[in-house]
Image (cartoon, rainbow, N blue to C red; front, top):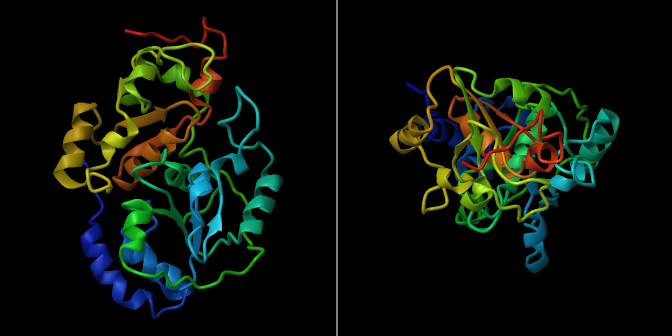
Length: 298
């Protein structure tokens, strides 16, 4: 049986003191990756950093007041087929994150448009966690939920921040490792793309079509309910059981460039699942030697 975060209890116990305590005095459950809007608002009022990750969606909207706009491409290679991969130079990444105001002891709240976006908030949270920041969170329900509470009170953060990248492989997998995990017991590989992509279409610049052998399909938004919030409780347990995910299962997710699968990785880790993201995803895999990195369409 999977152990799911008890968000309602946690928010009820933390919300009142959060707004009045300095960040260094607050108790924040870093096992959470997804937090409720009320908890996010309290953290922001106390000095957390707000990242507006909507990217292309910001062409028609202004960044949230007090937020720092950021896109996932700021931290990746610029060209295909390596566009989904994080930059290899930790010093460059450290400089980029400090320029945003990222500090080690300051929580980071990422928001996006859950209904219209691509899971960018999850990708940014995954990026920060992979680079060693243990207090990175996305808001359950996205920007709509965050704004439903009225005007935001966002305390200013120090710029530059003091964060230094210290990578972990706990949340990331390479193509070289992924190919060894195919058909392994207690490993579930999730293809989080659209059904047409899973079936072999290549709408986003992939070199070849198809999916990793043995991968199970779940469109990333299938983990989000009609209210824009992540499935929880029995609904989430049932969905994961359908995919063969149980206690002790290792999950590896991929998509086209590791964005949608980054969101899924955040949601699953929040649910207590050992989940990793293949950031190179289909852009990288489909450009590699077919004999070593096969794709199937059945």
